[in-house]
Length: 586
Image 1: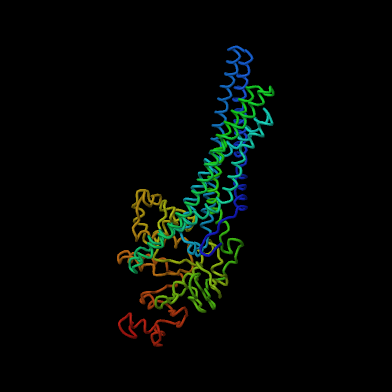
Image 2: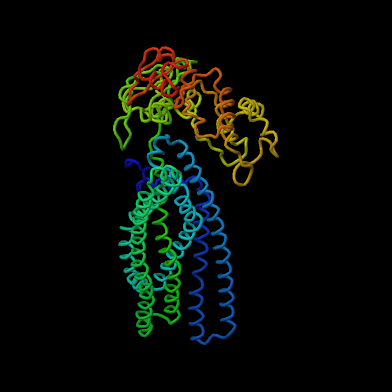
């Protein structure tokens, strides 16, 4: 995986994934092949019967003989139609079931990604894979896959029928198809890389747009509009170049193919006419062979169109399947020990971001079970970075962050949420019901537990007033939760998860005063009996804490109670004096 990008599966991995999906529904796949073969075999009767009619008419047969053959021709065409429709029906059902498996695997793998991997890659790449790429794969499974099978079987049977009539004519037909073979090889050598580049460029555009939209206020405040517009234009230019390249490939491929379609039929008519003139072949056989090759154009054209589509969907499938190779926490590969207790130890921790220097320079800290610790310091001191390490969002570059002797970053999602939960000012209401939003934290919770969690944060009143209570839908098509209600739902999830340690990164900093008061009352219920680590931007939080840790330039410079640090006259005393209006204020 390149830095900052999610991995892309190679061709071997894509083939293995495709075989795995087919094996999960082998019966349906076999039925699709069998029905397509039966439909193709029935379709071979048409040209042969037409050739028989021509030969019988030339031999002087009457209308009755022609009518009999015509009736058989109609029956064969009807049977072929029914078999083909049945094959498409089974193929589409197979495609939809397989697509459902692809979507489920994608969601499972996305949820298993460590948060730091998603942040480095950017939400744009993940969004593009989960929307455009999955949709492209779905179209292939639902439409292109079954159609390719149908037409491939028809193509092989039609070409075999020409060889059966006369091997020489079959060889002429194959020779006429050689230009298609050469241009197809030329196209396939270039198409996969071209479509992968196009998909990556599309992801980059999505990432830039998402980042600019979510950070619009910051962009305006720092007057970065021109820089963001320039970055967007560069990304769009790259996307345009990649799309023009794949368009160039198609503009060479398809014209050559269209011209090449004429060659097999023309060659068979020329050679067949010579053989008929020499009395080697009947006129009906020559006509039948020409009709077979003319019919070959339809399935061959569909095959080539689907092959072109498969290059795009293959690149999309490689991006979707690439999540299987993304980094995962060690707990997802092997079980980790259960923490011995609730003590958190930070030992000689250093941390560097991918695109910057070291931000933590050897931090040592022990958080005792049940205590309230406030982490303070100027902006850029490393407070938020430390909170992410404590919550297991990131792993330290060196040193260790452990809970009960077990590395926090190595805990699986289920273990981690029972140990440490990070609460920020960001809160999410997921599409679904109130019940769905709560069961994310504890899938096995019953109604009584859900109501107790809501009551603990003061949310049971407004939930009971909803039309369907816990089963009321939330979101654009349902009830819209305001900021206070959304935060209460997030805190109710914390109650259900029941972690022993909460890390608060100014959970109410961006809320309006009324919403903040509601949230702080809810927080008080959630914090009771738990270890609390508060990243404090407002020092009244530090005043009420058991201990205060002072961060400066990535170092822990002071640690003690509020009174001890004020009396010491150091960095904390200066911060307290400037915030409170004078040194030593309380």
